[in-house]
Figure 1 (cartoon, helix red, strand yellow):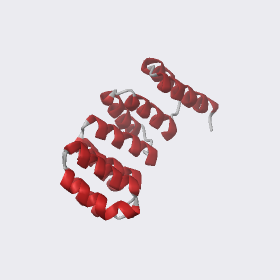
Figure 2 (tube, helix red, strand yellow):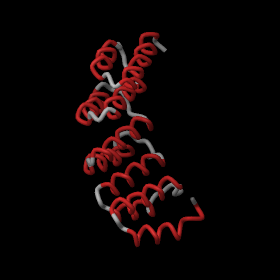
Figure 3 (cartoon, helix red, strand yellow):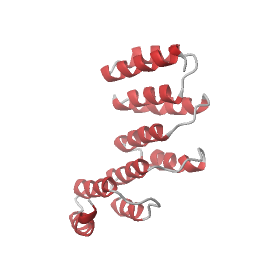
Figure 4 (cartoon, helix red, strand yellow):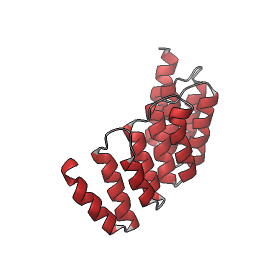
Length: 169
């Protein structure tokens, strides 16, 4: 691996943790051939600092640059969309994982979509999504759904889900 790439990515991570986006972008632009790791680091940095538009733009620039997003990249951007309330963008992104990037969505991607639907008040859709998951449902999936029930005040659904799935948790 190119030393400049490793050093640049490490510096980008440091500036990200410090919330210093301008320095982060300056370091990133000096990396000659950013890897998926570098791209994901800068997208995550902007996402973690609440800079939704910049993170989304960088995600699209990453793809235009020819870097293919990986599992972590998709988890980062789906989480961003969920926390920002970008339902349509999140659903489109989730669909693109397999459709455009020929990857199988990972359990954490499903969890992000459950959270996204729940935050948007689409509890019934979130429950249907959990029940239709092709992979085994996990405690985090049910927890995300229960959290959405609590946030949206759907006590009856939450009790029903908790009663049925408590042994699995």
